[in-house]
Amino acid sequence: MKLHELSLKEQLNGLIEGSFSSTELTEHYLNRISNLDKDLNSYITVTADLALQQAALSDERYKSSKALPLDGIPIAHKDIFCTEDVLTTCGSKMLSNFKAPYSSTVVNKLSSEGVVILGKTNMDEFAMGSSNETSFFGPVKNPWNKEYVPGGSSGGSAACVSAQLASAATATDTGGSIRQPAALCGLTGIKPTYGRVSRYGMIAFASSLDQGGVLARSAEDSAILLESMSGHDPKDSTSLKEEVPSFLDSIDSPINGIKIGLPKEFFERDLPEYVESSTKEAIETYKNLGAEIHEISLPNVDLSLPVYYIIAPAECSANLSRYDGVRYGYRCEDPKDIEDLYMRTREEGFGSEVKRRVLIGTYALSAGYYDAYYLKAQKCRRLVANDFSKAFESVDVILSPTTPGTSFKSGEKSNDPIEMYLQDIFTIPANLAGLPGISFPCGNHDGLPLGVQLVGNSLQEAKLLQAAHQFQKVTDWHNKFPEV
Amino acid sequence: MALSDKELKEIAYLARININDELLPSLKGELEKILNLFNKLNSVDTTEIEAMSHPLNLSQPTRPDEITEEDQREKLQETAPSVKSGLFLVPKVIEGDS
Image (cartoon, rainbow over all chains, first blue to last red):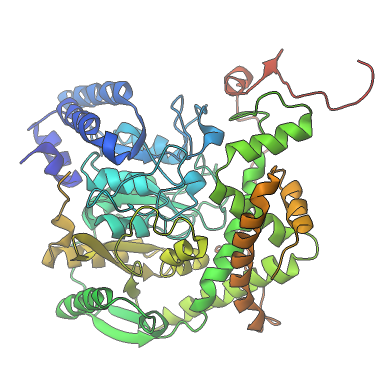
């Protein structure tokens, strides 16, 4: 077996046993990246020198029996995570020259566990998009079929793990940006409970919705990485002060008796036949594993999309006001006065989807409209969240398709924002309620993968990972990889 | 929901984003479509519902008022577009004789 074909867990065992060194593993990935990524465009920056330095240090630690928990595993970071002295662009022209002066907590935590950083992955600009077509650094291609999109906004992270150009990758999810690309690229992706993973140094899009997480090959690999990323951080005022359980400890326990809820509102939607049949098959698999299946109702879930497209743009318009061309990032040429500097820097530095959302958010927050839009949306958000609280009184997890279909062709939806927004119809509700969600592969249609989603109650990541792992023990979808 | 050119320009000014006149019609169309998406919320009765600003019931954490960061002015200003003597430079803001 070639090194890139091993899972993260197998690579860790190989390193511990001395079957290969981190330098060999890292060089292997760097070679694959230089051979294969020109076409995929999954990386914005490849940090080859840094990676080889880190790998060498890791090999020394193995030799002196001082290895760290994730020592020598080569991963990639979404380019939304600030990485000290490394270009951190967030997929935008606005930050195309920005070398972060400090590292995010996620990067620091993983580095202190011994990971090797291969580079920074491509993404939709400021994480706004579902196809990775809004990046200033060009679109990312889906490794399963290069005419198709990898999903977004964590499209680069998904494409590079799917093409086996990294063992796993960090990612973020504001309305589905981990789970949707996981589904479209045949990976396992988990967005933990809001507040589980520190947002310090994670470039902000919509602060009450953003959450960091993982894209990996399996639930098991996701559990390993997520455990190292999670935990309280005094530098993030929204970080949860909750103990992080060992996600791996419970993963092997059987799930017989688990109560799975199927929201009728999701299944009443007009979905393609292949989505319905793959989802039904996944439900059958869970029945065979001893799960109880219950129909449930989330009566207000249809409000999620409009609620999200008020709240996320409103928060983004506030967060992105910091990009003014004064302290860092892009500045327009020859500004004639300070106003001109602001206006043209932001006109030239932001792409069209980012501008659309900033304008919508500005409108929703402006005098005379605040109550009608923003306040109304916050009240409706409560209704959506209350539906979940009620549902979790009778079930353990909620199952649905992750996306309304397999991937779509590049350019197919990029001219119609609403069409694109519908991609996240099944993923947005968990962000509004702050709940953990996981997507994992459950089928394939015309050579493109398809995912199923489980949403859990607050802090129930262990249960989601366990349920996904048990599914993956009896199915093979997560072991299929594209020829690249 | 129809937006006038004047309204759109006002919003763009509030957001400090310059917009070329030739882009106004297409942008207006896109924004109107998005605003129409919001009509669905009008029919929902939310009179007794408390606004949810955040998924967690948080209070702002506090910490002792102690200096924890060291001065990194030079490092932080390395990424700035224009700096002189430790100050960020912008075009002249105050009118008058200099």
